[in-house]
Image (tube, rainbow, N blue to C red; front, side):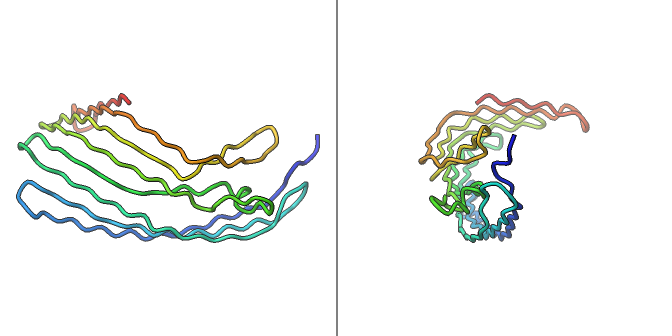
Length: 173
């Protein structure tokens, strides 16, 4: 056995989120928000073929949503939002082919929700896309960047608060 890579890694992040809601008409609720994330990465090589280095990145991700109350128990909604994932630090600091520090993801959903007392049932159609993903190989301790991904699907969620201390929920996606 030999040491392939030994590194001390530090990832630090700070974020701020702001949100505003508006009810322009009795049955319509609108939401807008934004989040700012800043990440700093640092590695110190300790052995093997490890690399020392630093990197920083900042990303702004917006959120939008609308909810229309059709009846007191039934609503339709649509949401849009962006998020992120930070890539693996070894890929970010890689001196040959560095990966982007932060990868943007975007999601959309439209759905319907029924609520009556302790019962809640919702059906959602969603779509998501990510600008990149990294695959970790445990055999050699490396990460490999891949291209963008696109996914979509349906989700059915049921929720019942049977008592003050007992809740049942289920998800089919």
